Image 1: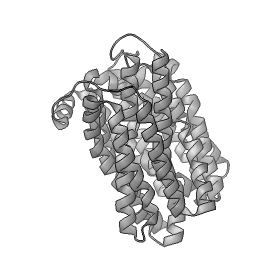
Image 2 (image 1 turned 180 degrees about the horizontal axis):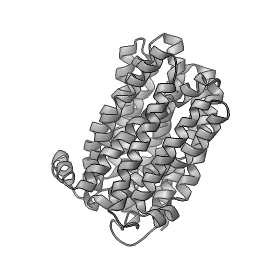
Image 3 (image 1 turned 60 degrees about the vertical axis):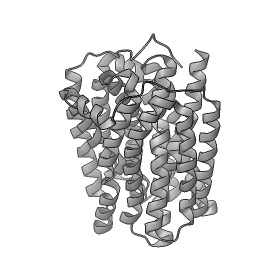
Image 4 (image 1 turned 120 degrees about the horizontal axis):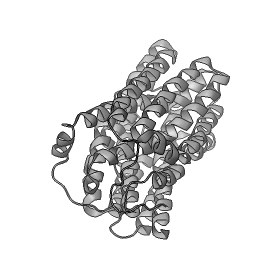
Length: 398
């Protein structure tokens, strides 16, 4: 039990830093980079798209390496090949170089330190996929946006976006290396498997898996747009950068109850039913951004609670669908699919905003995408039992 808690704590810190330095920091950086350099939002958004493509393709490889090697080597690779280039992205002088360097760094971090890695290590440390263990890890991970959104805004206000980017990358490298050294040797190792594409094709023959992958990819596409542009959208609604970053952090804090209530909700609705409900709440809550003012608060609270449950629920559904020994590889494959699909979102949304001067069309499309994902996942929920099946071994919490 103590060993599981230690692993969960370490991986919680990794999750906070990895998502915070990339996923959340980018939304804060976008407008300051645009204002300082004059680069278009579409061009800047392309950096995030590159990170999604590289992170997705790399996740398939990272999942296989995790199954074969364990978590320590994967995290060190993320520090050297991901976090360090990420820090250097602020030193470039052209939009093309920024897209390439930031995209490479964030993509490698996504491939080696996001939930598809940390959750698999947790599953094996705990002896099975349990909602309580995932809730503990993702509760810690939920602190990422409350910490990094205001932190990034504060760094930019004091240092400028270039030096802020250097601080984010260097500190992430330190966190990943220290966590790798502290993890037990072989953490996360499973059973080496054959080609990822073959395994994914095999799994996709089952209708439930196909529906899950399509719905997850669609939700990831619109969710990526939302998380990339939420700070900018709140600035469009009248908030300052600091205020908008603070409200986005409130959304992150609101995600914590969604994670804490994960186990009882899953016990009542099942993983797929709970995921469909979370997507439905995301669809309704996103529209509140259109109201501005108090609507921003409604958006932060409602979508925050729902978003807090989405990532662990996706993993629970995946653990119920996929073989445990190859969970790293198969979740890596899913990450590859969703990331490549999501890559189109930020630059397209940026083009729409630049052309219209408004976030209305983007917000409506994002809401519709979540609604479609909820309907799709309901099909999966109707065909599966309303209980969590252990992946391997006895129940164990962390």
